[in-house]
Length: 216
Image (cartoon, rainbow, N blue to C red; front, side, top):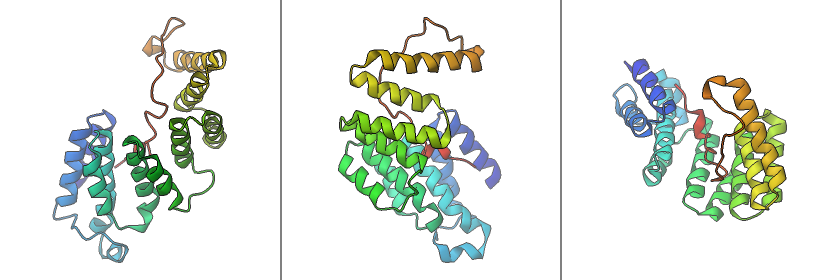
């Protein structure tokens, strides 16, 4: 059934089996119960049409996570549903970012009327600024998001990364230590401790959870 397949795709996605998730969501889109027509006028005709754009977006999200950016772009271009415009814009921006096309990524963010405190927009803006070497401004975006959505280890890592890139190692170490301490306290099963080592990497391994929000 569609519900079982949708749950299967969700489970594959959140267990990081992204290619399998993409296969499931692609199959859902092509099922007869999810006809290819995907526009706002078709919404009233039935729940199956309402799901088509959503499954297409989940399909594209899984493809992005699998690194299949060209295929994901093709899927996104087929989505013509106003209620998904924000998410589609963010995912297209993420694709451009991952491909190193920062000017196109910025243009995508400018093409949609986001709320000023949109947390996922702030993540992408901060990531782009990091790539451009604008670490102070990128850090400001991270703090803005933290005020809006609260503490997260991903945000703390991004803030630490900006300090690290500026060779402000003491500040970076403070944020990394907080991540480890919170992790040890909240998830003792992980076995984190004071001797845990952290390697600096990409500041937004996870921006995308734009794409993170893939669900059933």
